[in-house]
Length: 292
Image (cartoon, rainbow, N blue to C red):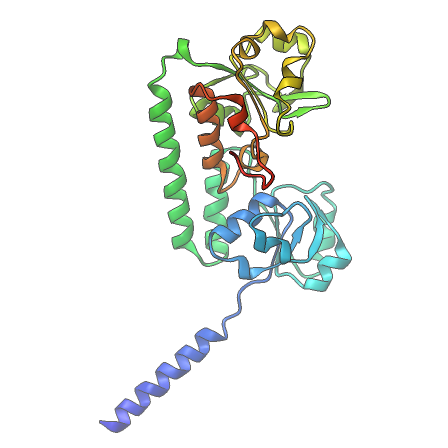
């Protein structure tokens, strides 16, 4: 009996030792959204490098910078010896071969719409051996979208506010109908005034925006307290959003512009300001960068 017990304990000890020596893959992310997903899945310990744009969560900032968004710094990359380099885009496609020459496997993951996001999470769950965490996020994300749609469907199409989202202000830039921002606006119960445009993001004129006459103007990139500057643009005093004081600035841009784990929070923010008659100052940010 003792001999059997001894053998069992030895086997268990060897199994535990074997499990402890399994090495996690060494991962570099050149995309902020990929970095957020990896940390959400509990695999931040796999990361050995990041892009300069990968700034969330806070722990990510402790990682060495080995490139910009979609642009590797080969010398820095070689120093961290990654097994995988993951990105949603590469500025120069020839850099893929350069990274592979360093012994890294380059993985490209599209992340342009909600379906892409779900595929990204699933792919990373399989790659990093955290399928359960990935499945949980996919279920959470899908359920949240379903709930948003049910709420949006309660608003008659004719009553939905027309929304202008100012992606950038120099020059004026907004989003077309083939963007996840457009979809976010719809899930939030609004209608994107640029939805009929084929371009993902496109420059627009003051006059064009006036013609569309949005009911709500959302300018995340404009700093706190800048709603008055938006209202004072030439001719804009006749726009419904301006007349009704429905201009919102200083929102947390990453939640709206970065498709990732915080996108659900971004849609909730949009819904708050699209469907509710909130005061413009409630959308500005305080000194800590949090929505008041």
